[in-house]
Image (cartoon, rainbow, N blue to C red; front, side, top):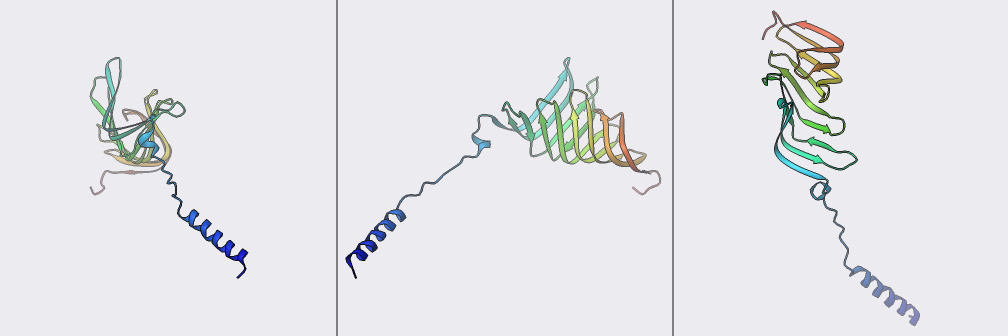
Length: 185
């Protein structure tokens, strides 16, 4: 075997050994949710909304993830949320629960998603998959399918708007109505 070939094989073997024995740099990227100074995680949250020292609403959640960045400040309730509304005399008037919620700080609204149930003290209730609470206008609304059940009837359709006490409401495009009177319970 010519000496140049032997040198080539030895050189290639040495090169492979050096490359194979190098330490590999492990790139670790931390979870931005746990390390970002713009994110706060809070457990067992209670948030109170009042106006002129009168309680208007209470938010309860198992977990709040607060994104405090300047571009998109928001609060997320990834483990579900309950909002209780109060009338002018401080009595509970209505409540809503959902699987997930997000409050857009600049918009002053909360969007709740998944198994949304909104009901008042008279026994009326709304079921939908998405509902938005406009804090400033004290309204709740959706463009999604809704089912409203009262002690007398069930009404369903697309789109809905009500005051936050759920005493005045309308379905934008009603699709059906059935009287509950006489139906088996």
